Image 1 (cartoon, rainbow, N blue to C red):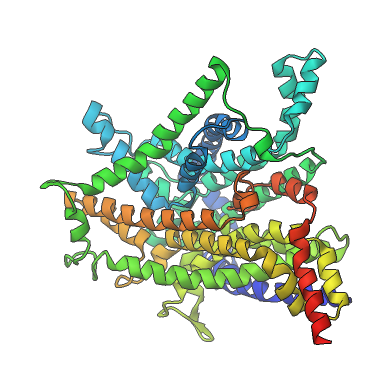
Image 2 (tube, rainbow, N blue to C red; image 1 turned 90 degrees about the vertical axis):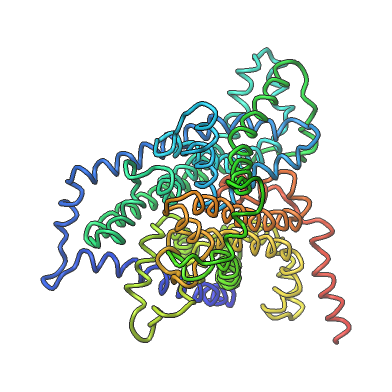
Length: 597
């Protein structure tokens, strides 16, 4: 076995152990507790549970709403992807940031925002007496809100780099505009569209917070039903079966996504995005731009604006009444002031980010070292890559409840430890770190590392002198993503956060679950605080992102959620060549070697 392969195996050992202990073990504990009795495994329970009418209804609704959400998101977001890819207009950068904001917002903030528009006393209720909360339309609208940016940034990132002259050449041969687009542009975009669609389906199929807040008791996805069976009914057998069903669906979607990406890999003629964007011309293009702007304002901006207004609109007038109320406990549900959740969330998210950076960073380095190498090692790393993505698809409720059941005896008796919350958050943050760092690591010319090794540098020094200077901005971006995701994690944290140490999402959910205008106003105010923290994280992230990757938008969503850019980041890496900036670290190492000798 070569030295390089030994290094790769050592790199994946730590992340594998982490995921085995804090993901595989808790999930297996839930499944085992639900399907195994003193008499052995009760596999007949699977058929019994799936044969129940109420469970079939949950499965059908989960699949239907995911398909509907995906179709609606693609329908509304693909025109936006075209506008961002092909049009140049004032404020485009600001608008791109606005589109990105929903991606990093916690589900409880989005739920609160749509309640402020669609719920009792909301904007529609006040204007026209219409309420859409506890309807499927509220769920679909919130899902589009969340995933609009996934399609725009994924498809638009590739679309902006497609050379428009290829389509123009087809039209000069007599093809109509529609035929040229269908035969030239569409085949090039198809892998990115399919990849984005599959990711949106996965995210909406596993939806929890949105359905819990906006759907009411009439609607339940698999994730919500797992929560109800575990937390309310204590029916672990049903919860275990539903967990297995969801896990199987997630694995199938991820496998299909990987197949789409591999099948879509091809040589494309990509150009600088700045060369393909031009000012809109003609009535049709200006109408399209206006329509996209209207969708962004109504769908993305309006709910957040109404949320902020509701946070300041108190019975005694427009002011800080609800924000001041956050500073005191009322002796009810909260043992501490709701505002204390800010400090708790920041502390938990910081620790979770450090864990995610360590685990995800090691995994990204390992995956970048052995790509395109056939044989057993390549298959091993593909399996390892899939393992890293599973926490994004497996029920967070199952993971959280599994922590309580599995980590309750030596040597892993952590039930009373505060570290449970950061560990659960790091499980979700680590895949973001991997997908943010991996495209940049793969873009590093391996000849730089080989040259450094030939000069006698150890693997650690090669990483320090060659890789780190090139990926340090990507590391900072990964930190921003992991921190924002950890701040908003809700599904597992709702089980693990102690009553005297709630996180911001848990505190918001508790306030929304209590009657009274004061509690509702406090929920709006606390949601505004959480949104502000997440937006600041996003702005810092956008500031730190490498300049050559800011305009196309591909890198930042190179898998914000698992490999969301799919084929696009593969195209980018395959067409990028090392330039003078990439050779600088090796030159610096060579100079240091000479001076040392």
